[in-house]
Length: 226
Image 1: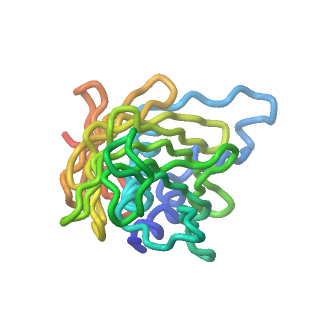
Image 2: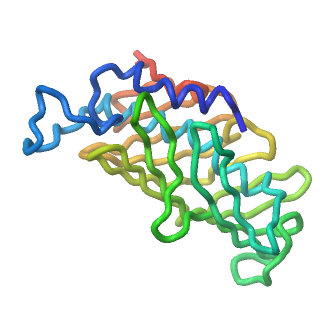
């Protein structure tokens, strides 16, 4: 797991300053019964950046997992870190309709959060991002890579704000800190932002081909591309 990413998510609230979506806290300018402020495109770009950074922490478990417990496949993030929660797995040989298989020989995998559970990322003081995953992937051995399949998606919740995300041909690698290729579509409020990965720590987020940001996957920061 990339400790820089975890640290970056924890510091994200400080970089965002007064942006409300991240902490979900009340402020003097927003009374308890006021409507939730509408997100701007930049707010959503920050959300998408946080999600993009999280991708490289959670999804490589499809090929990194190696700790079965009584033949039950699940991974609980270590206590004391800024990441908490559990993801579960269904591994098969012969694709989605194949037979259940050991985690280290399977050619298909399903990574998911159980009903009523989330994976939580600490952000700032008392804030968090709650994620739910439902990921399907083809797994290739030597090298160990997982290519996400159509239908791989999930939800993102931060305070009063909710979003959905999905993936297109995203590839994660064992011991790789960043997806080697593919993209993520992230929809929040009135905006859908696409984040493209290339194996480096920098990704590109695009909104309607008009607004673009460079995303640092180590600290979830964004920089407008002129």
